[in-house]
Each structure stands twice: as C-alpha cells, then as structure tokens.
Image (cartoon, rainbow, N blue to C red; front, side):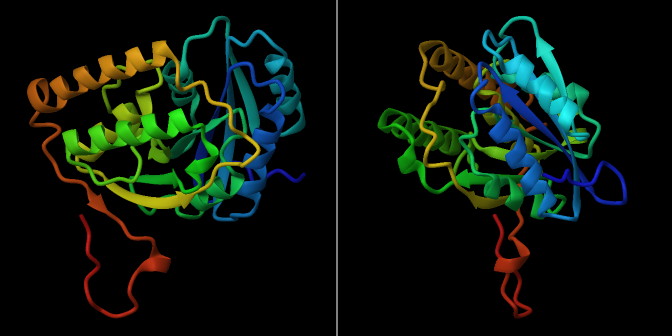
Amino acid sequence: MNDPAPIGDNKQTVSVVVLAFNEEQDLRASVEGVIAAAADVPRVAIEIIIVNDGSSDGTASVARALESEHRVVRSVHHETNQGFGAAFRTGLNQARCEWITFWPGDNIVSSATLRSLFAHAGEADMVCAFPINTEYRPRARQILSSAFAFIYKNTFNVHLRSVHTTPLYSVSQLRATRLRSTGYSLPSEIMIKLLRHGCTYMELPGYLNPAQNRSAAVKLRNLVEVFTSFAVLILEVYVTHRDEYAHTPRRVIPAELRPTSNRPVASS
C-alpha cells in the first residue's frame, strides 16, 4: 500500500488521531483504511497519530509495527487507560497539521466516510460525518444515541443530525477552546462550544462497517460522565460564559449540493 503524500506541498493538512484501547485485532485495518482514504484525495496530506490508551493486549506492538512500515504514522502510548477524551487530547497536543479528526481503532467507521471528510477539508470550520446505517448498531445503542442527540440539539438549539459524530476540526480553534471532559462526552462538548461560538459547519453522510457491531459506549461509567458533562455544559453555555457562547453558527452546503442558479443558498 502506497502512503499518501507527507505534510507539505500546499495541501490541506490533516492529523488523524487513531484512538486505540485493546484493539490488537482491528487496529491495522483501521489505520490502513485511513491511509487508503487519504491516498484517494490528492488535495490532502496527512499524519496519523495512534494513541494507545493503556491497552493490555498486543495493541502497542501493532502500533509500533505500523509506525515502522508507514512514514505518516507515529504512536503515543499511555501507561494506563485514561479514557476517550484524554486520548484525543494527547493527539491534539501532538498534532502538526491545520485540521484534526479522531478515528476509532476498532475499524467500525468506513474509510469511505473519512475519504468524504478529506474531500471537504477546509470548506468549513467543522466538517461532520453522521452515520446513515445506524441499524448496524445494537438496539440499546440506537435508542441512547437518538435520545442523546434529541436532548443536546434542543437544549443548545443546534441543528445537527448527530452531536457525537466524526468531525474534522480546526486545530487552532480547538486549542483556543476551553475543554473540560476527559471521557466519552468530549466530542459533544467540542461540538456545542464551537457551534455556539459561531463557527461554520458542514454535514456529510457517513457509514459504519457492517461487520463491526462492538461498542464500549453503553457502560455505566460513560453514562455517568455524559450526564455530569451535560450539566456542566449547560452551566457554561447559559451562565458562566453565556456571552462567549451566544453566537449563531452558519451551515455550509457542500458544493456538489448547491443550486446551480444564482439564488442564495439557505443556511441556518
């Protein structure tokens, strides 16, 4: 497999943080899917940062092997498991590119989804992919995800298909944002804070890999962390930093979906 172009050459640059906790079986497929997606989009150059979040299986060995095989890959290793949010923060601290996204090490999201994100890099402050084929998720996960999205969208008045999704963020904007969560709710905290700060955003359809139906999301500690973070986020948005988060985001329509006439494109 040929690596995509390294960072440089006046391209959109993207740091892909691959989050891995006990993903010995699926990590290679996930990373190679990222590499294949980038190779199909010549306008982007990537780096891949594997964050091994204290795995107890052979994840570390797989990560180091991938690092030795591909010039765009490097790995960081936590001695103990610190959680989803902490692992992504490690990747954010290590990132050298203009844009950043996180990618699951369990290969649950299709590389075609990432290819779509790459193709639209730089067209909005935040480019989001929401899964279409959610029927491949367990029923309990579907119900919780729908309830989660409904509550967040109506509480914070944002118009997204999903608030816990796979996005492409601006590194500079993320580093300038006060982030509190170290757990599962970090993507939703980022999403709400950036949108309420007035960023531009684009939504794209994405797909889950049908063969992958594992999920660590529906766990008691994750649910407790989500409810706690939600309460604190309400306090920040509507009380302690309400002036900062009182702005209206602007939707950007993908170029291929815009009307061909000169009529203005509706946005929210």
